[in-house]
Length: 333
Ligand code: NAD
Image (spheres, protein in one colour):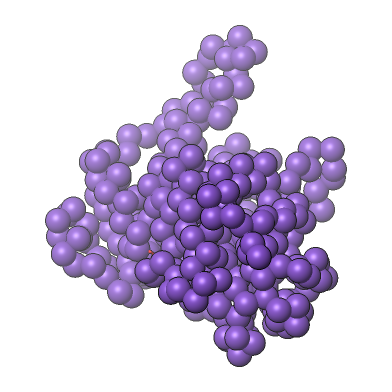
């Protein structure tokens, strides 16, 4: 009998890449465009494995329903796992896998794309010239060379981001509770305590997981300690930043700019077309109205290479667990 996988929050690109990877394995894929929650979990009936993404909510009630339907494996097709109650999954005997490193380059490169766009005001210039306005007024940026960049979290993505910044001749500082000194020495990166990064950084970029300890790491107080006129980049998780604190500090000029690929309350908003709706989230509405705020809709991972790897690891792990083989190295949670 083929393995049946119930797959949530899927978009056309997910379907295309997962279908290509699943075909040679003979897996049956059931795609849902809605998110997985305790309310939608009954739709996994008949499946043996579930595949979920970043904004699915795999809390204990949801997991209990999945367990009662006989789900033995949840394959997260993402790196982050803050959206699943792991102890609950364990106690229910559900194996959980993720894709820890599908393409750290994709996210690191998007981080730089956001900064270059924001700093050199490409988003404004693009619209201007389309209206035949070739004026340069208000488009002054700064050289990244010689600026101080703080990388918070030097895991897979943070390290690549730091190396790219070194390629721009920036001074790179970093904080990580588990530093990698050999790598830092090789790339002339200096580790400092987190609090020491704040007053020094012209650009601060987040590359750490969301945990109870890192929730709203950037808030009214910590942003107030930053160098006046700094720029914040977040391609990690929205809840690492108190979004209303960004507004406070953008209004005073304490922050010169903010680029976000993730947002505190992105669930139900990001990945969807709301162009004909009124957005109820006034914090997001206000952020989107600022000329020095750039928001992308959690797209840092969205490259051909990353989607290919996500689909390969996800379908391979489901095939392995269905035949009692170990999941791929480093993917088990
Ligand atoms: P990783 O596990 O390789 O590295 C994370 C690093 O953060 C580790 O070195 C860890 O020691 C460090 N860390 C933990 N707590 C910290 C703290 N309090 N302060 C500073 N550092 C801390 O993870 P990664 O693959 O590099 O991913 C980094 C982030 O990027 C994660 O939040 C992940 O969810 C996010 N991500 C976003 C996208 C996207 O599309 N926007 C895609 C993939 C990953």
